[in-house]
Amino acid sequence: MSVSSPRPTTPNAYHGGVHRLTGHAQANRALHMVCVCRMRYDQRTKDYISRRTAQGLSKKDAMRCVKRYIACEVFHALRADLIGP
Image (tube, rainbow, N blue to C red; front, side, top):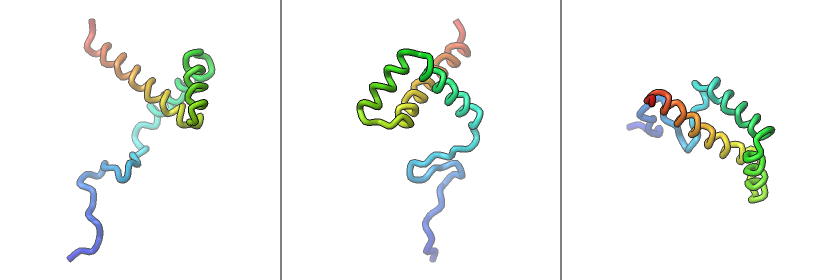
């Protein structure tokens, strides 16, 4: 009889909502740089960050929201490019 807790079924499974951060460092870096540039030069992003921080989010959390939006934009652009006209 084993007293230890059960192991995850796959090696890439995450536990407790913490995702593995390895494997996509270049993509994450590019996403971060796009976010930083937008926060500096794009007025819509500046307004969004101001609005979210006024709602009580930290700047880091607001950046996370912007990164999610950018990732969706990039995904749809790549998908449209693969499908073609």
